[in-house]
Length: 343
Image (cartoon, rainbow, N blue to C red; front, side, top):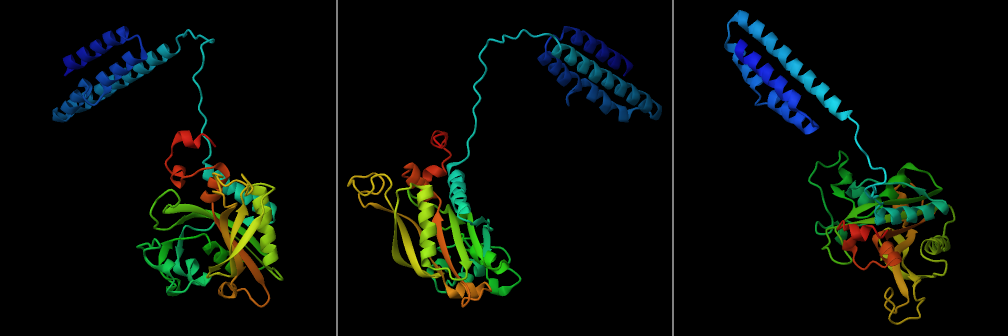
């Protein structure tokens, strides 16, 4: 054992003198301190020695290991402090900066417009229960949207309150409306952005996950004219000062009356038959809206005889596609750097 230890120490000393670069020092560290190093083999012999020899050679091997570690550290430090010739005129490497995703930018821009109009931004939860996602919003039990083919139900234990039904991935951002109204007293004006999920087939205009912004206001004496004024201001601040609105009658379970909202084409202004944006129609659909149904107010603890409200909801992808001339929703999610760098 004594001969082996002495020989190992001598060999290390010779190798250390030869080492001239940091990579040489690293190679020595692996050779003398790595898992397959000879010093570890000597340590494995110690348990088989006599009781007295164990203490002696265990101590000697630890001393040697510490010497090697210290010597390698000093050698490495000495090599790193050597002066290096640096050419200060040599061009530096090009630094690439990341950018925020276009959907985040558009979502915040939409919310910012409504903040200027007096709304507060509130983000809801992506995992919801049936009561907040459907029942509170006056969506009946036999409505197609409750079907398993139209909603991502989650295989997790149901809420303790049985009336709340199963958990699911929210299919719209409207549950935020119910949660805010339950916890707040009018006047209320809120927009709620976030991801929503529906089991749709992916194509150029559909995705199983997309983004929405829900907005609503509740107060005394609110009417449809207030809703139209808010949406007109939004459209002109977000798209163009020249756009106009067109409201078409529609049906939503949680609003009555309800409407689909179109904006006039801000590219051709309805004057070009071959417009790439509106295809000559002159109008672009952007969102749905309406006066909050009295049952929704009642479900959320607000007296519908005293208070009225309006609500609206829009996707984020569609306004982004309209504003920036994007023709395929899948481009938002493919992480193509060339596409993302354009924004």
